[in-house]
Length: 346
Ligand SMILES: [Zn+2]
Ligand SMILES: [Zn+2]
Image 1 (cartoon, rainbow, N blue to C red):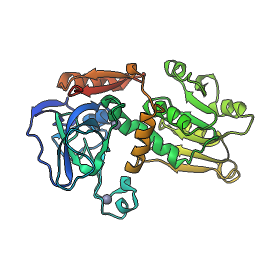
Image 2 (image 1 turned 180 degrees about the vertical axis):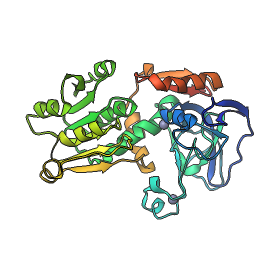
Image 3 (image 1 turned 135 degrees about the vertical axis):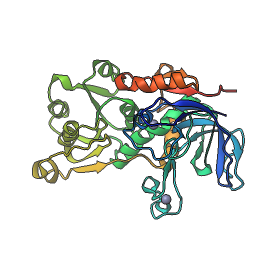
């Protein structure tokens, strides 16, 4: 089969002809229909995120048809449409048995630690295959398993409830999903903080207020907009200590700040006035859980989570096209997601 693989860190991905993987009793073989090209893939190629096993087929945002099913797998059959949870967990360690598989001791990221979806076929543990309803196109099934799933996990970790207000810092892929999911939670006012004019203009959906951070301190703007009360929940999706501080400072009493963006810098806060006095919580968010994907698929099926048709750009399973798409991450400012169309819908 055809695959596009990382053979050397810092070098372009390469096309290769490799054998179709053989599955074990607990695995499924998926004929890939669509695979999202993620910013993380660019970091694997560049060596910013370390990869130990080379060559490896990248691609963790996968949707397709079940081609073959291991003897122990009962929830899907050959021909089913599926999307893939990208973390292959052991299922036995103290975290897996509690449904906290993102901390699995031996968890493997599909498309990083083991071969992923930049290929005609991919082998995954059967428990990682989730039935994808017919109404959800493959390209959406593929990409929602990464950024949308993490946005949903962040809202769950922040315990966002109906009627509460929320501030979202950063309107990239995560923010785009977070805004829609926050509405699916029936929350009250949504504030989205951005500096990019094109992104600010695209925030204008009913019920969301764009906060232009170029026009002054977003904390003051949010405080004014909430009549001095502050918001109940904030999500920091950028990975900057400045916006992390703002995400804490814009909270009202009993507010929860969920930090999703990554940074290696330290952040300072004033414990008395910013945390203790208001009983504010700062919550770390890492990845998502398999159990949350069913809710995500339901939201997508009911149209609460949606991607407009122009949100996708398609490329072939071709090394040149894929490498060019990875290059484009260095200066992308729009919401368009590139998806490898490996096989067409039948
Ligand atoms: Zn991804
Ligand atoms: Zn485990």
